[in-house]
Image (cartoon, rainbow, N blue to C red; front, side, top):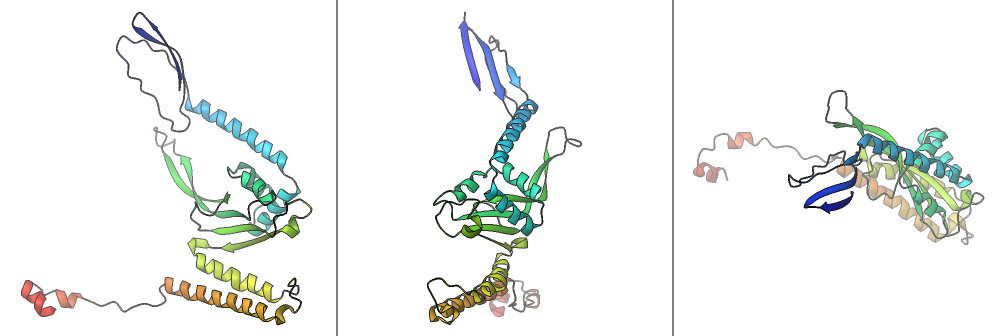
Length: 273
């Protein structure tokens, strides 16, 4: 709010007041003495929303102009994995408020991971037909969005990109410098999703690996065998933890009604004890 006041003969006159209430949609109540004359110029919420939408459109087009071969690589992988069109993925990415994380991921010594969640999120929907107060209904809707992985609950599918070095990611080296993967945690079942990802994708890939870098013996090397054994053991621990959480071990429920239905006074409780 920007106000300029001019005091003349004891009266406070407002020359100009500009008020934007696009975020809350609320109105301003000004309490001044009875002798005060106030002139207010109020920017309506609808006008402000139009301006925000205009700015958002400009931002999207600026981001679209930045898209190059690196972005296309990410978009292609996401579209294939999540079963969306490349155009849908592109529109989602350039509309995301965390778009800058992609550039930080590409930068030399940048972010080591880039995460996308694809899951139901609550969308605010205006219910203007039935309510004049502008109230909203929250409806779940599938959405793809960029995340740091620490602020949103994970209930759907995670698509991730991991860097293999600190080199700057370019259009020519992105296929060598960046690994892509996904795991499904529908309904928030993270342990099951991670167990499946490791047992069905990671471990088979490791066991079929021919080139182990400086380790010339490959799978015959004792350290490699110990490593693979540790991964197998970890997956087994995940499986046991998941089964325990899913109440695979159930205790028999006791019917205590037959013990307490005739308890009337303290001596009855003592006898029952």
